[in-house]
Amino acid sequence: MVQTELIKPMRLSRIITVDKNKCVNCHQCIAACSTKYANNGFGDTVEVNDNLCIGCGECIKACSHEARIPVDDFEAAMIAIQNKEKVIALVAPAIATNFPQKYLNINGWLKTIGVSALFDVSFGAELTIKSYLNHITSNKPKTVISQPCPAIVTYIEVYKPELLPFLAPADSPMMHTIKMIREFYPKYNDHKIIIVSPCLAKKREFEEVGAGDYNVTMNSLENYIEQQNVDLKKYPEVGFDNDSAERAVLFSTPGGLLSTAERDFRPIRNVTRKIEGPHTIYPYLDSLYEQIELGRAPLLIDCLNCEKGCNGGTGTTKKDSAVDELEFHINERRKHQQERYKTDNEAVESITSLQTIISKYWKKGLYDRDYINRSELFTTSIKIPSEQQFDSIYKEMHKYSEKDIINCSSCGYNSCEMMATAIHNNLNKPENCHFYMSHINQEKAEELNQHNLKLHEQKMELIEQSENLLLSIEKIRNFTK
Image 1 (spheres, one colour):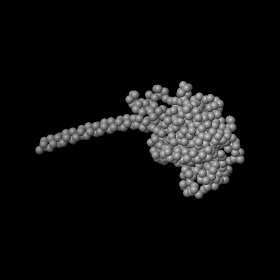
Image 2: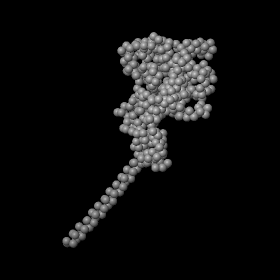
Image 3: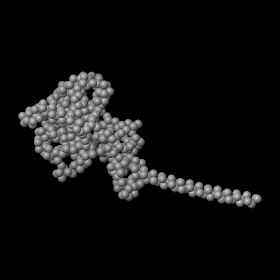
Image 4: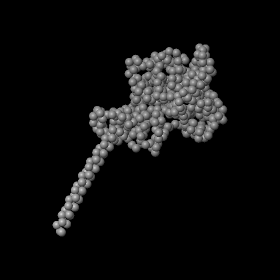
């Protein structure tokens, strides 16, 4: 299913914009970026290259000047509703922690303003687990990299295409839900789809798979509700129009995928690695192919970009909340759902009954997913300097020996080599190097000292000339007497 051949890549959609009036060129965005070269720091403001940006959102959190602006489809979705277009909404599991005790009221409000039906993506997560386990048992893969996170998918497509064959060949919970609706709820086939999402990067997934119309982040939704003074408690609690999930409501929490898979296949925990957070997952992926080849990699990698999972995702209202607070509300929902299905005591009969409901909406091949090798976006944009070119750039940066390669990271990059590579690709300039500016300042200080020394010498010469002149005048006076 994976398109491993190199194809001409489509342009990636914009996830983040820059307010040039607020950007102070501090390079905090570059320091936070997992891919570095997605940022252009050559000018007075730092711009974003959409084709190299994975949409992780770390730069938004890092920018204390509010110059990085997230992009979603909230306004377009509201226009569609106001124009009385037929729309349905899919709601991600993170809704339970972003709108605690009110997420069913959100459903009531959405139906009031014109949304025809609401579907819980958590049930799509139940289908996802079935697809994963079917792949594992049927195809016996070496490793399966979970792919609910579109930032991770983009990272692999652009920067690590050798890992494409190991990405789970099945849709994300969101896409499982969309395809389920198209297949089993045909009366909504002429409806556009609004996704109530915790993630900015989800838009990329919609475009690649060709399903989903509006990515509406929970952050935009909350901002609108506050601005319009919408009192959610005045709207009824409305359930979802699809069957409810059981413990897959945990999917927005780190390890939620693993916990759900373990219900149906207990040994899975012993062969799974749970890993998340941009400072951890991308270095891990950078070395993963080698570990797979050596036979050291786990069977399943349950991974997410955001350290707090989708509960604290880039499009949420709770990015700064404590992890315990976020997961408390999700776990409360999980307990409720397990009680509902009578699976809280792991009764075999109850779990079998749940699996029967899930199987009703699962069809072999329906939820298959392939991927695009987008590595050309990187290889055609970023050229690695030759050894001779590195030497030339280092000299331009006033780095003449190994001791000058100080890797201070003040430029935003992790090393002088990365900064030199950025300069080589016109993504930065020596003036943004601390060592370079220190050298320039030292040179200017020396020039100033030399200038001051010359001034002092000239002053002393003038004084000496003045004294000599006074002596001459005194001699003339004495002579005329």
